[in-house]
Length: 284
Image 1 (tube, one colour):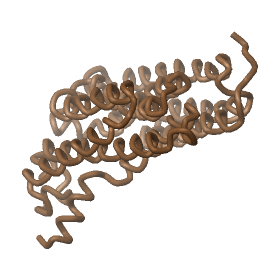
Image 2 (spheres, helix red, strand yellow; image 1 turned 45 degrees about the vertical axis):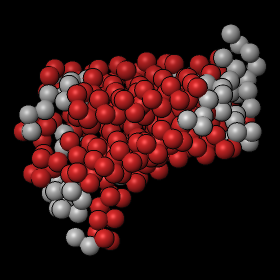
Image 3 (spheres, helix red, strand yellow; image 1 turned 90 degrees about the vertical axis):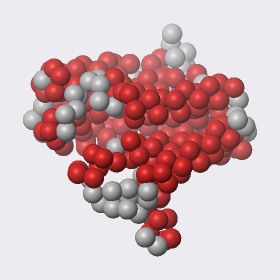
């Protein structure tokens, strides 16, 4: 392999789209907490640390999955020989160290979140990935915690807590639906996902129930006077899209999880709009 092919392989290991998405979520957490203007350096460090940590987690995931990928994903960087297993492991360690170095410039709560997340990334790949429900829950936590990390970086975690909870619930719902979508392949690989363990319809029922809890809780930022009516104007359609997606998943899991993702993006936008528009009068 040429140096260019190896470089491309290393970039592929990080899953650039996932890196960008997670970095954006961290930025949104900081924006919701209101610290963009006063803590721009901390926000930049948090966003960069998130990107490096996610890239490292994806790289080490490919390292541990290299034997399975030789069969199921032969075009990935390690199976096709663009990056050696040892090279992928070393690359992930470098990225992890970079994330840790950047996190050390942040307030203590952000450092704590970063430390927990780094451990969770490794634990997911090595221990929790094949456990029914637990792997899904860990992924949901990691996605939601990007908002917390961004808020903690600017010193006001309060407004992002609800965003963390709602994001984690929606992500857990989507992860379960994705497992239903992939049940045939997962069964062939010997994985024990939630739909395999309890049945597809029951798993979808659990996913839908979780989402209903999240939707019921979605007005809380307005009730706590974090955001005004503008937040409700955007979050209510987001709730409707996500509820429809959960219903749709019983007939078409592929379409359901895809549409749920759109609802999640719209819900994140609701927090941005809510923050930009100001707060509501105190109700509780």
